[in-house]
Amino acid sequence: MRLKSRVRSWIAGLRVGATPLCPAGHLPHKGGDQVAASAQPHSTVAASATRSAGVSGRRPPISLLVGEMPGRAEGGKRRARLIATIAAFLALHLPAHAATKADVEAQFRQWLANDLWPEAKQAGISSAAFKAAFADVKLDWDLPDLAPPGFPKAKERKQSQAEFSSPGSYFSEKRLQGLAATGRSLASAHASTLKRIERTYGVPGQVVLAIWGRESGFGRAKIPHPIMDVLATKAFMSTRPELFRRELIAALNILQSGDVKEAEMRGSWAGAMGQPQFLPSSFLKYAVDFDGDGRRDIWNSVPDSLASIANYLSEKGWQGGRDWGFEVSIPGSVSCAQEGPDLARPIADWAGMGITRVSGKAFPAAERSASGMMLVPAGTHGPGFVVTPNFYVIKEYNNSDLYALFIGNLADRIAAGGGPFRGEWGDVGKMLRSDVLGMQKALVAIGYDVGKVDGLPGYKTRRSLGDWQAKNGLAPTCFPAPSLKAKLR
Ligand SMILES: [Ca+2]
View (tube, rainbow, N blue to C red):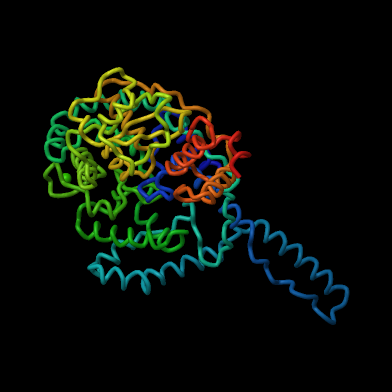
């Protein structure tokens, strides 16, 4: 039943219009520039379903009947068979891992006292605060990516065989339109707060609104989990315990600071808290009290939530007065192999090559002398962009090109009523990661830098491929395709 309801809520979360919490939370994504990796944000939910099935299916056998009882007559054998039958019945019908779970719960309490407490004490947490913080904390066995001690390890998914999603599936037009409409009405409702935020942090209101909308449906999404349950469970028994241990200590600091009551301190399954979806360590660094009540409250206060988002971007290097980027059309004479954050040029130089904005407008005068970077997430099979350093600041919020493009597009719609990107996303998600991996290895073997050799086509893979295509008499497309697989071995 529980599994079914999880699957149902997962499907509901996928539905357009429902605005789930940004499922990736703020965990650092692996694979930085990999556009496709982040297009599968829900994979861990499925993995967790597999895992709990695996856990309950493998139970140490009840050992009532180890060996025959020697020297017994026929009656003894019958009795043994009866016991065997009962044992088999129990094995099937008792809660399968009750004993083991109880054992893990006991280990958890010991871990809190003997392992975590000394570290918390060193971090300045008082004994009273520590005890109060964990009084009601429970292990949450429904979270994904758990590795309970003594339980069989879940089978790793064979990533090399998985297809990566086409980038286009990331940009649901219906969802973007809904977020833009709500964002515009909230822009006027909170106009004075947003003006004050822009004056203080230099970040335009529409960018702050776009992140707020994407992360928590403008604070309207139900934030499901008591954060201490999530962090304690994941610090004690997840596949990434060190990361969550740091976040758990940070959360204890937040509770001790009095910014929020534990009952209100809710977050996502990935540990991201409140309306901006900050991990506790980000909260400590970037959350601000903007409504002046003396508490940093990203759960209930809109001014605090919005200003905290802006402060985050500002601290990560947001350049006031600059845009995030522009959708452009790139003439055939300009190779796609020039993309990447490390190949910046003055935007006037890109314009000089014949790159123009799809809107037909000129690049703003102030942008022309400043630096910009080419970005082609699907090579020549999708829209092209000239982005500014602010694009990479948005990626600090969630390390995905597609995420940052989503925020940029939504911000433009909120500010000026724009629509979808003009360039169509081609259907480029059909190759297996193992095929892309093979192409990456072949490129590395002939001296190319493809970034991480992981089967995902990040910008280094894309531009290396484009360069190889040009040198081999092919028109550069800067994206892996089945037709190139045979040629590149
Ligand atoms: Ca406040």
